[in-house]
Length: 403
Image 1 (cartoon, rainbow, N blue to C red):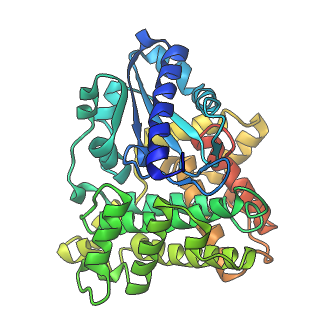
Image 2: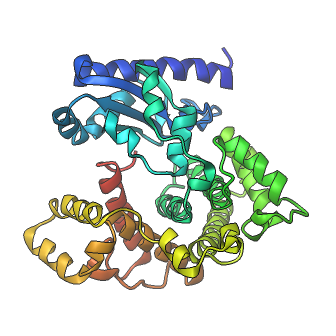
């Protein structure tokens, strides 16, 4: 049978069902309330390369397991990477460029989820694979206008780390190198679209739907609130790269020039991401909520680090527990009050954008200054600093290296 999107969808549905059965068998069906899928798979917009043999799955598979007890949460939160690897091994004839990521939560955690794009999508598009579908109704139903500017900024900073992790020279050398770099490039533009719509209070679920809305409101001749964030050139890139994400193809990406062309596309995406990040993070032109009477102080709160002091300290406690005692003391002394105002992820995101900006303004050959305390990277060679930062990110977020 010829490979097509329909061919893929039938296979992916069977794979997701197998993943749900595996998770139930490992954790125990009696300990689980529900297993559901979110992210691009839930929207049926995952990126799969069908022109290679075997096919290459570029998107992550985002599974969420709701467990019934705190004991099960504690045990399986620490073993989530084990579950992800086991799921990946179910699919021998597909190459994973991304990963199966298994989140473990209590039902009460759903009710406390914040107003952010991914949560909006989870509520709107999430699909239950095992258990009671009514569980998704416990996810807060908020309006697009409830998404804060800071959440949009976080989305962009997350993408900066992802782009660093696909920097030229690291992933272009072999399969699925070109596809991986192109996919990370495409994600820059799909997330710029998501962030811009979030800032405008007009967020909608689905990559294709967001690209269409951006095209309608910020295309050539557009004069709405999005025009300050998305100019016609950026709008065209969002359109093009959304199409690539939905149907990845080397020919469609126009990279016949090989590695030099790939590097140029990567740098173009990095420049666009940095420029958009600065506009969004400073609340400058293009933030439609600035003209609605929002004071400078209020904007600072909206764009400040989310989470409580307890959240910040809990994040550092988890991270510092993995390092030696001397290193722990060194980091605490160097970071000082940042331990109270940022989590390790906040620090990695912010430093990631600084590394990305260094790359596009100074080049990779120019040494970088180390981050405070050497976390998440030391000074010196840019590429090594990027590798250190991405390693810290993957360890904190996923508990394992990519791939």
